[in-house]
Length: 313
Image (cartoon, rainbow, N blue to C red; front, side):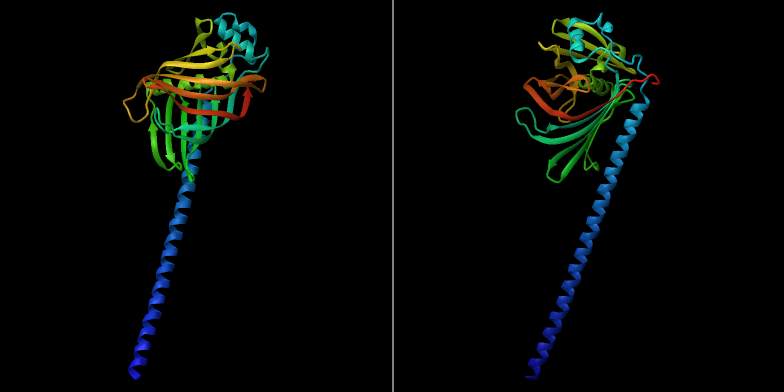
């Protein structure tokens, strides 16, 4: 019997030590998880702050590179030498005396296609875009939701005559980056011109845009941004508004195939009046590839805010 009691004491002691060991291990695991969680939160917070600071710096450089507008308001007299469809467009979207837009801030909602031609994979996105015609240039800062809980930050820009693009998971882990080259800079300036339909005074001759005729429903617009020159072809509908924007040889780089010029187009829908000017309420951007059209972005503005030219620049 005495031996039995001794064994019970030994088993009880071992059990107590096991419980203490388990409790210690559990506390260690919880502490480690807490440290990892706090570290991850701090790291993500820092990444977001750094991303936002870089975006703010790009916007600051964009604004500082702008020159004063040579005109304060739009007047129909400057349309006299324009191709007929371009002149009709400005008469349709602007009224005499419309202030010249020197800065636009546009909030977007939409979707981006992460699939490939024939296999779409649309993911939701939101974006805020700064556009400065007298630079000329833009900064587009987007958030794409890849899966619930995972966001990819994307910044696309044309600043100081350079085009750039960067994408990173949570703004921290890079997934794509395109540094400026003559081809990417021209593609970025072409994007600026296509999206100028949301601030139509940016396409006026007094803003540096030159127009050449193509036919009764199409005209080519050309703009120089520093050493970069780019052109796009605008297609006008029966309502005299811009419904298509085409570039026959825009630089295409999907990160999967050899970069090369490809045919590109944008399509505008459902025009509405914003602050006295008519702008599209929906749009689609797509590549016209040998295998067929590949739409990669579709969206709509939820907020459009303008600043105008003043006598003090």
